[in-house]
Length: 273
Image (cartoon, rainbow, N blue to C red):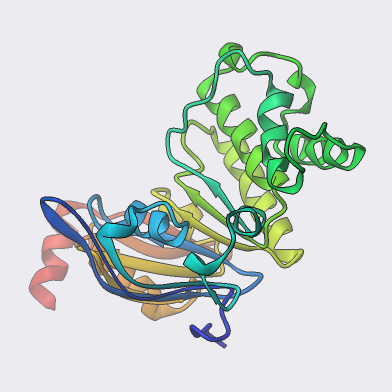
């Protein structure tokens, strides 16, 4: 059954968000089912990252209206520490202090669970080790972040986000700089998290990877064009439409994939509609 605002782990109701020059989100309604992975897709400028920031409580309060509910409670009513324990974030192009080691960065994910100025516990170390291994970053845990490639750094940031062990995990373009094998590892990690009951919401430009999720939210010009299961033909139709029929969704070896459609074929499809 599709999630509703009352049954979802995270929901957005009538969200309007703006920057000084223009409105970015126009009355967005969305619900994200507990223990499921939802991918948010759409063309450039559709409002994907903006919506994710609103969901994460990172959009300036004066510049958005509506309601975001986390685990059934208004996000703005959560105490700061409890919210940090319940909602983890991996942003786009995050800046990391270069002098920190891989272990240091991953350990930052445990801060919401620690008292002020307390040393990391044995449990913290066990969780961080598990997350670094899952991200295939454990072997260089003592290396400074400055020595890492972009893809390696992204894997460390993923480990940090997972180390929060929050019931809801938001990620904006988490596959940036990851090569295909590590994109596959990332998908496996998402499936492992959802199997444990974690709700995952990710903004993705890699449409074929986005189709591996449980659900998909398709945005167009700051509005929800469609939300549904990734294996639903209606989702495929919305996905093709939002990209002006320049892609086509097809099953290959039992997996849904987005394939490029030639300009000639797209124009012919336009004439037939």
